[in-house]
Every structure is written in C-alpha cells, then in structure tokens.
Amino acid sequence: MINRMIVVQYDDWAGIPRTLVFEPTVPDGSAEAPFYRNLRKLIDKVPGGHLVEKLVLKYFNEPGDVLTQLGLAPEDIDFCTFDHLHVQDPRMILGSAEVIDGEFAPRQPLFGHARMLVHSRELATLQSLHPMQWAWYVDGGLGGVDPAKFVTFDGDIELGPGIALLWTPGHTDGNHSLVINTSDGVWVSSENGICLDNWQPELSKIPGVRRYHEVFGREICPNANTLEDSLDQYDSMVKEKTLADPCQADPRWLQILPSTELAPWKRFWPVVPTYVHGGIEYGEIKAVAR
Image (cartoon, rainbow, N blue to C red):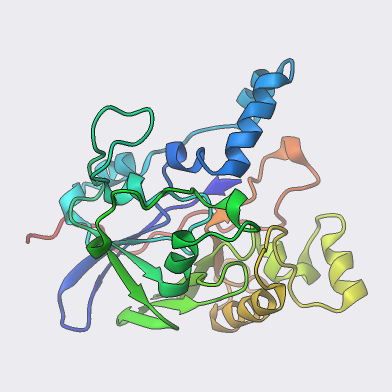
C-alpha cells in the first residue's frame, strides 16, 4: 500500500491564505506502532525475510522533502491533519519537549508552528487506549507534545470555501475525510478503503470483492481492520460516495482518493486495484508571505 500526502492551499472564512498538509506520514513514527513493531521482529526471525522486504517495500518521499519539492518551507504550513491516528506518532510532526527513545535531543516540529486538526474523539482515543485498539496506535505518541498544538473539532467542519473535513466514524471513532471542491468537481479522501474497489465493488475485478457485493447485496466493501464499529463505517462510506463527483476520465468511477492506497503493482496480481486515479493537481502551490 502507498501512503498519499495532499497539500491544499485555500483562503479561510476571514480571507486569510492557509496551507494544509493532509496525511504527512513519517515512517519512523509508524514503525513504532505495535502491529509494525511485531512485524519487524517476525521479519528479523525469518530466513530471507529482509530480501522479501526489499522486494515489497519502497520509500518515495519524506513529508519534509515533498515540501521542498513544492517550494515550501516548514513555516509556510498552517495546519496538518490525518484522517485518523492509526500508526501515527504526533511527536514526529508537532515536536516534543521530551527525548524520544533512541534519540539524543527533543524532537523539533516538522512544520514549524503548524497545528494539528484532529477530531476530539480521535484524540481521546490516543489519550486513553483500549486494549483492543493497542496494536494500531503509537502508545506514548503524545509524550512531551504541547496540547496547544492540537485544534479539536466535532462533527463536520468547513475550513473555507471549497474545503471541509467530514466526520466519517466507524473505522475509528474520530475518523474524518478530506473533501475538496475543484474545477473537476468534488474529491473525497480517506482510508475507509484502500482502493476504489472498496467503494464501488460492483465494478471490481479483484477476486471475491465483486462477489461480496453480489452475494451480500452491499454497496461498499469496508477495509478489514476496523475495530470500533463497522456499521458506522458502512454508512460513512456511503456518505463519501454521495459527496464525490464522477471522474472526468471515466465517469463510471467516483473521485475518491484512498489516503493509503493498494499499490497497482503487477507482481501482486490479481490483488491490484481495478482503477487508479493517481495524484491530483490543481492551480499552483505558492509560499505565502506572513
């Protein structure tokens, strides 16, 4: 699967230019989630495990490198957000006054004075993990983080004309989706699915996915690691489908971008996405004078 980061520049309701970074995943932080930490131990034990890892693992960009490529500096970022905090370590983004294990000095913020937009229920989950949620969250990820760095919200919020964070609970209690209105219509991004096949199983060529739709009569196929409430997630994915516009290149498909997407690599056939939008690009990213 490939993590997708989206940079959006917009004017807020006061007309002030803002820059939002959606899904700035830092691999070193995610590796500390128990699920991945245990996977690492397994790879270390299996003969030839590291060769397999090299075959299936590829690093593209670190979040800071992407900003440099776009001509942005850390101080240009106003806000960052994740659709949910599975395997995310806020210390990697917001910095920490404490020294993280294995490091030698307090970690500095990745995006200067940027604050993290997070649903109040999602932050509450990370503050007090349930044993059933433990494997997918970075325990201690809030250590030394200034609480003022978080901007919490409930329900749906509009950040400005044409951009909103839509509360889509189910996968986690505080899961939310990025919704942006463009010249091609509305796009929605979240990790409620890992490919368009999840939202439109009737068009899927992945073995079992289309049959799941036909046998059970379900209009979506949720991802598999939902811990909280799959019923809510089902409704949330229908909500996303309702808001997303048809794709300009192929109107059969909706403009939904999985924030973590199944890689379209042929060597994993037949478990490859039936259709992939790729990245999206509108307008021009510019550094804003403060």
